Amino acid sequence: MVITKEERSSAVEITPLTKSLRGSFKAAKDFDYKEELSKGLSEKYLSHE
Image (tube, rainbow, N blue to C red; front, side, top):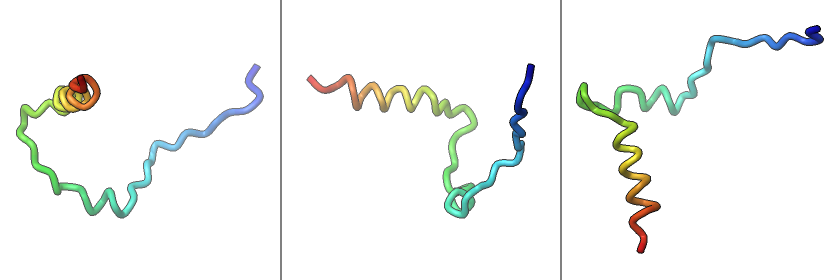
């Protein structure tokens, strides 16, 4: 039995800051941001001896 139904909006509001940053970063077509993020986080948290 469903008592309530939650309406989900498919439209996401983009903030003015996000709009101003759009297009400000150019990356190579084969740029893998997940790999770079992983490297950065590993360096930050795992390189402390």
